Image (cartoon, rainbow, N blue to C red; front, top):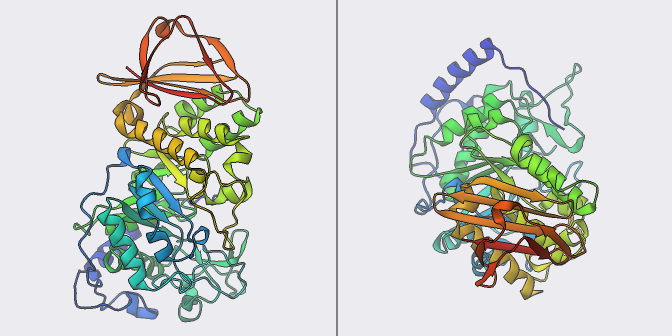
Length: 468
């Protein structure tokens, strides 16, 4: 659910006054290694940033170059920071340069459904995953391998046994009787009150805590449409005063104002819907082009996160083998999502063709040694993207679809690429647009030359990644 907020001139004035006071009170210091937040007036006076752990990572990729990998700790064996660290070489080998860790914080017990998005303490790690030192080791190891690390951030509400409930009940949304309200339909989460400036400051300081204390490189912000945009403006403006770090900001949201507030990336919700509907046979491939060209256009420099699954969808819709009808269908869908525009995401487990739904509420061990041929195919698609600026930021030129196959050409300067994908479980022979007839390309997957006449054929769920 998206909760709309109304912005007023008075609200803007109050925000400016709050920012001035906040920035004055948030001077950096390396003398305080403890937690940054507390109850009552402690949030507005006497604050010092924690000391910087490690050396800030200097190779955070530009937005257009990001290949992101979502880590659900509960799919690893052991399901710990160390368990993830043991797989970093394999994750890097996919072509990944940004790792997104799902929530690493202690999970609340009161009214709990064991959701990792029910945060008991914003400035601690979940003991089931290890200690702070283990998280630091994971982040440091990722940096050494050339990968940035971002944390999942849950700003909208806390668990019912979070200390804030007791120390600062006015930081929460209350009804007329003074009872704290749950967040939307989430019975395990108490809704935070973004009209309370002390709460905002405590929240932002908790975000800063992880930048300094674990040397992380940004945040994926859950349910980002729910807080008012001026909160995100306040938070990201403050984080950007940390000049030693280049930070990545991904909004799980849809509002263009979020890009204006400082997020570089937001979610391609509609694109995912159209993609899965096309492979289900309930929409035409033209719907994917329409989503790309009309529905999901963002103000510059914002980019969409494009995916064929993530933790929500792998739980609700099943594995990519279910959504896209087969492993080959899943690869065909990924070849589209990774090349038409935006930034690609891999959710751990999809690259090994895991065949079942994955609940985020329990441990679901995945065999990450399975299906090396599928892993190799994901590597090829990602390598093609990395090699071509036309894929990443090129202009979409000639396009084609016949209700079964789809194809599109992209150019950037002298870089010229052509992507073809079959969205159905049957071979398709089709007449090419005139611009592609009698042209010669190199197949990036086989490194062989191909010259088209007037027609092309794709096998069931087949795809071709071509370059001039």
